[in-house]
Length: 97
Image (cartoon, rainbow, N blue to C red; front, side, top):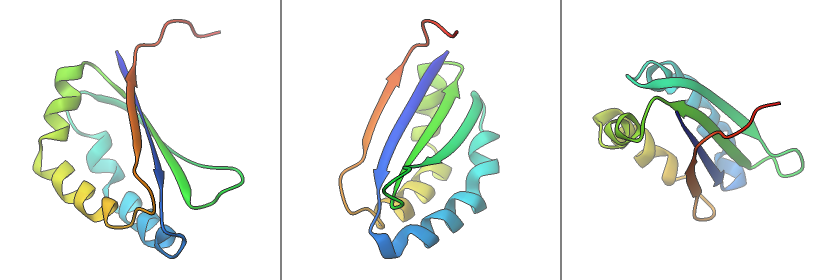
């Protein structure tokens, strides 16, 4: 299983429109083949910073999503709202307590 974390900093005035976009597309993203889990978190002290946390069956399935028309549509609309470059990384879960 691959865990994908993406930290995004938005222009403060774009926060509400990002949330609308996320809520409009979250079921499609979660329903994409290979996506096992999807969460959206908001920074506790900086309300214009969000993190997506998702689980994928494999890197191949994540890449299939990242090259899909759905991702192109969502990412184009999302990145137009950024105030800073996003930080994204993939990990493998080692221990859960």
